Length: 93
Image (cartoon, rainbow, N blue to C red; front, side):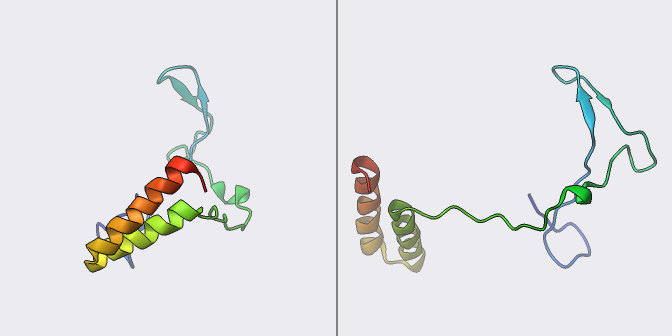
């Protein structure tokens, strides 16, 4: 979850990667002991690949249109589109 709590160029996340040995439940031991709060640099595992979002199915595409119509105030068209979405989900593509 991103947020902007001070001087920055916009919402962003901070992470702190740690390697641990899990001992069950909430018990774990830290693998790395260092001055960086026992964290490690995860960039060695970055591949540079950008994940491809899944292709939207027909019902999802129509649901996007219905939501856009609702936002623009066209409730009559939105209601009809939501009925189509529900039909597709109930009876298949």
